[in-house]
Image (cartoon, rainbow, N blue to C red; front, side, top):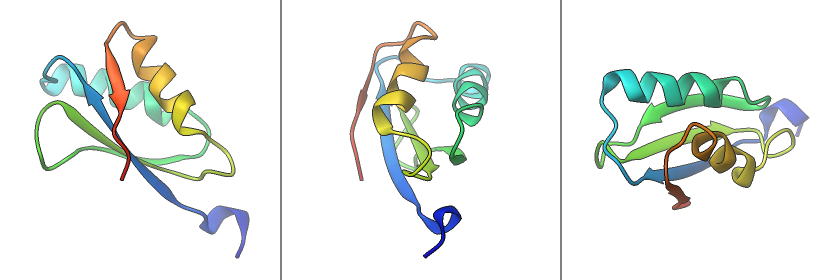
Length: 79
């Protein structure tokens, strides 16, 4: 298995609901983290962000820090 084929997913619960503009801001910040492959609204609701990433390059706690650095209260939910 090559390093680029590793994949993990995590859900981040943001305490305040994310509208389209806010989600785009959060998603853009997460996409700048090396190793992040995709960021999307989780199907369950406007509080959840699903992040797919390469765990060889990024860590879930770093993803959470990226969201909280924007001023949002958030928690890792996991998958």
